[in-house]
Figure 1: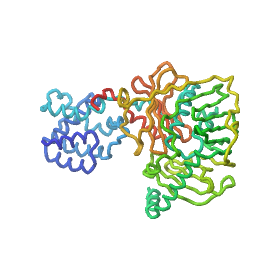
Figure 2: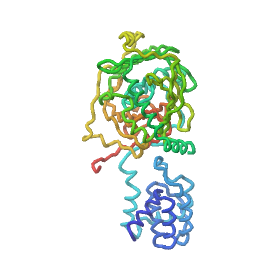
Figure 3: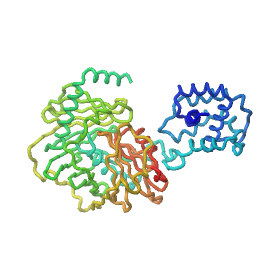
Figure 4: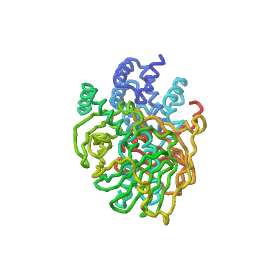
Length: 192
Length: 324
């Protein structure tokens, strides 16, 4: 099987394939059982790495692959949001259906017929989560500042004053870059 | 979308209008920096209004400015080539920041109009009258939803911005300021730039200049990377400094599209100390605090909240940058 197909498969699993490419690939997967099995394995590996496999497993797949592929296309139809990369752990419910089937393979991961493929799939899905750290989005309260303690406001003001001078150096349209520092140093506004 | 296409169509058919608008902005930019002026303006943000007086002078060694609140608690900010001093009696604090940008002072505030026109559409609009002076409206509209737009009223005589509206990407006014009085003069007395508030009995925060330039070739420079930034944002500064009141070093990364700027401050996490967690909004300025590994990261900028969040969550601490 060509490297290109491998690449496309893993791009698909990562949600990085355009819908036009997905449609083309899906056609090939439907017609090629070997390719279908490979596509499944990519998913299993990806999902198990993300710790998303369900505890219970239910199954038989080969003949249901085609139907599954169709289902997958629908949840991958919207191009992956590059910004919310972490939220990719595939948007919960959408994936559940496919995972139930795919899960069978997880228990048999050890005897995947093609270790080279497994490694490839890992390379495709792993590096983005392995060699860097980022902000945990769950840590970000959606609302406004939760902690308005004076120390936090003081500290933030220092950053703001400093930032304003750098911002002014880069370009600005208004008069003083420090207007907000004066404008927002009001008790009523700190509680907002 | 429709609005954008209309604007694009407008620009495409009348390139001269955009060029003219750019010429006005260029003049404004020089005038803002080079002129000596004093004026009073009203600033409206978050449903509140504040009046302030501004005094600005260009001296041989650089720009001097004094900003004084005329409403609410007295507050004063003095800017000089050396640094910024904020006198805030209500906080019992005088805050001094001498960690100024190390880049040479530009001749104008808008360094590169070409870069700006790549991401904003400029349109020269109608005549109007503000603070008793004839003025002209210029609109600066972003081409995507990641930055703010602006509407400026520039005086015909001095090209100074006597009124300014800061617009959400969708077009609503988020903040605005308008001068009620503005006088431009050849010279102004030095004492107009001296602080009026007595800060001698207040706590002094920060004093010494403590900036350590980051040598890009070594160490941590490439440890912090962005998986995403709004189009056109480029790094303009990268320094390490000791912020007033802090003992540890703070790494400071600055990115800009030529008009809007975002700062990222990175410091060692001190779990015992209260710190910014989540988003804080001050009109058009948003600040977001969060943790990555053993670091506290603060992202600050005049960009929509969604953009600040997106930038913050695109920041990566690369564990092993050897293979870069």
